[in-house]
Length: 238
Length: 297
Image (cartoon, rainbow over the protein chains, first blue to last red):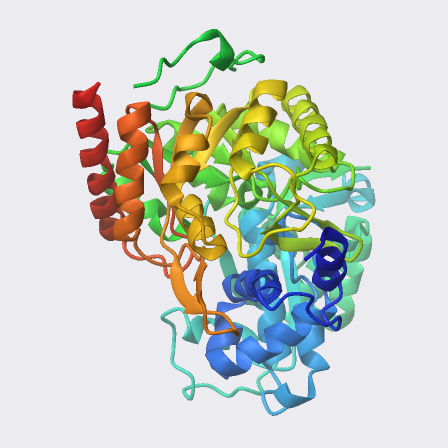
């Protein structure tokens, strides 16, 4: 066994093994990636069972090698892979559950940022306020699903059991961790549109407009106050 | 008993202000044990973290680590630097390792004699290198660069091997001794790796210990391995970290401690992680061997 043979065979898994024991190294590489996905996507794994998940994760790992040794970043595109993975199509909500778990994981590892109190904007003239951009907490993630994706997640975390709610109930979900605990909550479509606009970097006036399009009698101060009270706003920029 | 603290073992790089790790047993820090550790505050010499698990921006991992760091000394163990690789070291990864060292001031910082970078991306395993003059120079250059970039001495860990390379002209123990001499790095002796490699390569574990530069060893790793068969039907041990330390590895560990005196010793468990109490029981077993080593000294 020579080094160049080893290097070729460990990089290209279709290459024949130059030594039977090289299989251990290939298995280790694959197992570490599958294990990283199991840690990041535990509900997804429970929904399809260990064996199916192992097969699906192995296919993903073959196609998607990590580019960094920081494996906590690995697998961010797994939800998209699942949506295109034909054998999983009988579980139509699986990709969205994976995306929610991915947002949870991002919130878990997101940088710290101090939320602002709502008093930070008290006393500002409405036209000045409208031009501002509100910085969303780095942990904040948003997901709009055609399925009851938050209820499915909660059913696997001590909430109401699967079967006690309709799976095809659309849900808009906010994930955030302004302090120690990660929150997963459903929000109204207009709050979702408002927060999405803030996350995009729209001005406050444009974010309000995006929400008002969905809800003509929108309570603007309740929208803004709600974002502050959830600890989602960490700063202003012009 | 070896004379520790001779001129050859003086680190070339100053230690940062950090809590020194006592010559007692520590455990790998697992997320599933965060709460139990803070609630029970078990008696342990230190906790060790995998550096890459704490390279996120913030959140519970850093909050728990900060709280545990206030109670215990910490050691920092990298798994992804690819010191043995042909490719240049990843500068951004070195910067992340330096940031973690600066933030948590671990008593010890270690990495592996292995490689993991490849044109296709990061290969999530500790891959072997041949022991040649060319590899020796490359590894020493990478260790020099690491110690300069991070600003402290590092420990180098011996690998677990499943096969060997035709090109090798050095024994592993002599290769590692030469690295320690040239770079001033310390050594992390993984006793399970010694046992696994010796069985797989049909050599004698104690011969390796006898040839190894024990005066440079500052930390020990212990872990469980899996006993399997390869395609030829021959015994093949896998360094799986998924079970208890085996009796022959405990025996080899006692042989090492009899020669070195007590050293900080880590019980590693990275798969099938049991409740904290089970790992504490294994830690007590290592403590008993360390106590015997101290009495013998």
